[in-house]
Length: 169
Image (cartoon, rainbow, N blue to C red):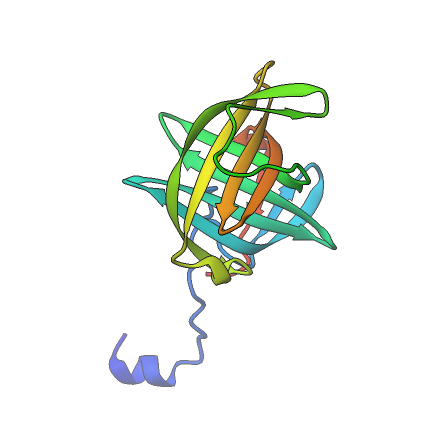
């Protein structure tokens, strides 16, 4: 097709939508989990050295969940919700929550980049710690943002438990 035919063509060029995976979800996408459709309103990319992982803020009405995704030796996915649990730094070796003991699995420092509702933390550094329950079924995640420690409670999920619908390019 020549220059003039492209210029005067009535065909509308539709942008190609990139197929979504849990490692490239974008703001505005829809994630279905447990038969509920959530809009992706925030995305945080964490970098600790050369290691990278993602957290997506999912919103349905006034209900928020966080979907975490990382490629370690294999794909690891988790769904988390913010909880109230008083924790301060330095992070303890173990935590108690709802009658269960959680043991520190890892901790470190990560540089973050945020998009959407999470853009206000762009470029910041956070200290984090992950804890695992005695039965290895649930997790508690801590993130230190200045003087505030955000605490989340979650569990692993399998890729087949979610569906991603692209809301943008």
